[in-house]
Amino acid sequence: MKINYQLIDDYATDEIGIRMHPNNHELISTIEKNLETKHLEVIDPQNSRQSKLRIEDVLIIEAMDNLSKLYTTDKDVFYLKGRLKDLEYLTKYGILRISNSVMINLDKIVSFKNGKYARLEVYTDNGESFVVSRHFSKKIREYLR
Amino acid sequence: MIKQYKNRFIQGTLLTIIWIVFLTGFTRQTMEVTFFWNILLISVSLSLIFGVIYPYIWNYSTWIAPISIILSSVINFLTGYFVLYLYSKILFHLTLPYWLVILCVTILLHVIFFYFYRKYQNEKMARELNQLRQR
Image (cartoon, rainbow over all chains, first blue to last red; front, side, top):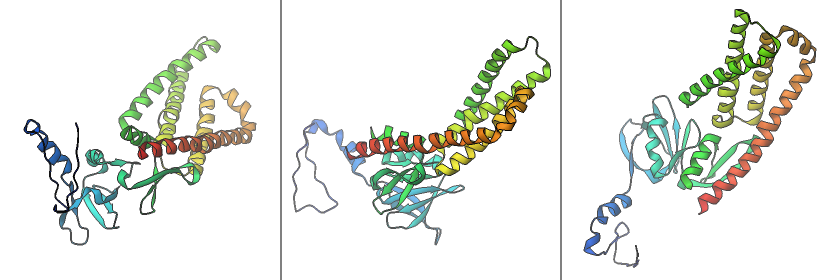
């Protein structure tokens, strides 16, 4: 499908205008679905209140007992209901497991490197590094292909 | 993961039993019942190591290479002697004086596998992942 872009100053920063042929009206719901900001229900550990967090703000999710610990790019910490196994649906948003205990947001990755002591490491845009297990590195490769 | 390793363990045990019984057929005409239990123990030990422990360390663990090397070398060395003892006491006593040499060779092979080969594999994988990510 041919896509034409027009950059117009009159639009607000959270507004997008789409023009299309009436025959393509079925595309509207698909476009809306894809452009919609995805949120996660998280628990604030300081006051145990539930709030919504944008998926794009997630850096990593760490395994805990029955909950999971979520770290944002701003170094905030939240809890998520469910184990990492229950959070595997986040794969479709680019949050993948890199080991038995960590999931990472692929958008935040800068590079993969062979780290110290023959371990595969991933570096994020805030300078942190995490170890990737061989099994999950293959899964990431499949996802990126 | 657990289901996968359970299947590997069962398959490994079965295949090792068949393999050892086949090998033993060349040297022993008859087999006592007690020896069959030994074969069962040998099969369980070997499939536990090669069907569960090694694949776990290689695929899932995120330990540093020295831990993987020490752990797998010690397990391999001890199980090796245990299996040898169960299979033939004569062979066991024959190899016992060379335990230090065997241990050194075991460690050396594990260093090659868990350090140099893993490093090579990681570099290859990192290169591939970086290329895919930049597409």
